[in-house]
Image: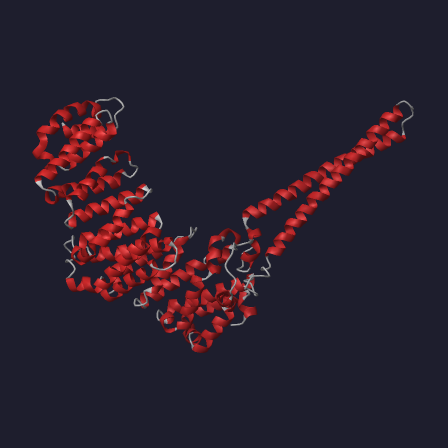
Length: 545
């Protein structure tokens, strides 16, 4: 385990081959010892870990990444295909101008000879003029060629300069190719040791801590973003670390922080397939974690939600951890899984957790990105549907938060809010004025680009109208539906929207069918008999008939 040996691929490949052999069990045992573990970290991972420490200790803020700052992490942008193409274009331009210069020199030579053998005085002035023009052309061609050569030399010097780190960078010792090779070999050695001993990572906290530092590091993130500028041999850095962390998490399910660490890999696109991480997260939170550990996941998510972390990380945490966990908890609709007991629900979602969630939404909800807001609304919808009793004391704060979202300029967020308000009306007693206001707003939302969300909200709200409204109030809702149908008789999209609601919820409107029949006859022609009518309108006409 020496730098000059492991840095040589021929030696390191031979060493790995020996380490993998069945008869090398004593060698692997020795390599798993405390002394060799410390030596492995110092030799293979000393440079990247030192960079991480220097960044933590430095007061220099993280600014815009430049070529020289990326070089500190072993990234040379001039290794990319686009940069190499740029240099190739300049080289071709030099060749073309060199060829052009050669032609002009030949022309000058021919004119010089012609001038020397000119016998007629009358021809002498014309030959002199042509010769001077040829000489000027040669000089211009030389200048162009020299300028292009200087440009090429400048590009090469830039490429050389970018290999060196920025002087202002806190990283004094950059990731060189040798450092990348040592890190790669360190990964391979640990990979072999894990394949022969599944308890290797749980028993070596120093290695796990170092790998988690590398996983969170700025260097790994930048190297993944700039894959094309890295040698292909080192493209698997994030993949190997992801496999290490999933292996560690399987052996230590109590450490839920690793689950949130793994989400980082989905914050940026990559040519590598990390779907196995997503599947691992889904399976772990659904099948492996105990009720107490699921509670830890919720508490860790709430800590993240109230922090200054990126909204994208919070959104991914909901999608990949919280939702699968809740689906596994509330899957009482299948015969194979009994409904969760009250004791189980209290362990996973204690009252304090619900209270903290509502407080965060009321305090910081207005500052969240629309995508995160939609995901939080989805979470509220799931909770309303499954644990309404635990939300009773928070219903006023909840409706206040949701109602503010209905004023959003973002259609996706607004109509997701309408869906959750509709669920709220189904679950809790709501003032009839609010119920009618939501109903009327959804009736008029036929132009919305979020038609599927509007339809889902109406499918949730309309069946509950007879239970939430008195007979007179329901009559007012029917009257407004008829009024809108009369006023918008020439708007085919509005008519289609209204009749779609009625056909999907016939039990609500059946008592007033005599009032709808005249409008139905008039609407059939406009909906289905027009030659340009959409297929869905024709299907709706058939249902009405």
